[in-house]
Image (cartoon, rainbow, N blue to C red; front, side, top):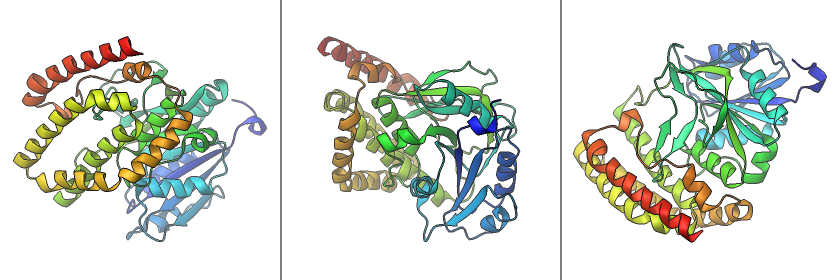
Length: 353
């Protein structure tokens, strides 16, 4: 390990909201890291439990605690903390994680050694540490996400990936200054995918670093109330569409539109059967109201866009492959259609580029 005077300074950010069951273990694991040249910013979104009291129980001078005036969500909370940060590298963490002793060191070493790498994704295990939660994210061409190596025991080698997970990653501050921070209109869900899209569109690299490990108390279904699941479905579905509308080129939006419309009809039918039709329809109303915001984002992205449509398509998956989404309708009807349609889109992009 390099002498401390040569280590770049890291800002570790943990945004909290009623995280009392997790925060002490999270902070203790960060403080136990072999890499010590960091500041830890705990930014609380107006918790109603003892989160901030527990965070303040640590006497380490590297810790600073800030409280928002109101709940800013994942995106707004992290952006506010990033604005306070002083590090050349920013490490964003969920509070429901426990990081390994070389967590920071592994990613710092990668960013220091290779200036072409914009951000790093650690190896994320489930909270019990037995199986892999994810090693990155693979976007599908209609906006759905697949968690790489989900529920696997096989650790892949270090390599470039398409997107990182917001549960934990490290990024250069200069990259955020170039492509922007999290989109605060998202509030929660898909902010990580959207930021990853912008990084890739700027022609920069995201790398999976297995030497950096952490455990995450991942829950696909929220553990408290059914209303919280409706809230997740609203933000997930709306933000999935916003990510496409913001980041696709006009050509790719036009080519993908028929498949997207047919898939959305299927999603409406699914929401009707499962009892969340009202939530699904609200996503369209909300997305429509954000058209001016989307247009502004597209103008900003155009200023740094370097990736061609052919390169964008190369990084996307044709089918919906995440285990939690595998129903009979998806595997026997939707995925074969999407695979064939995506092949046609890819052909058109190749011959017209």
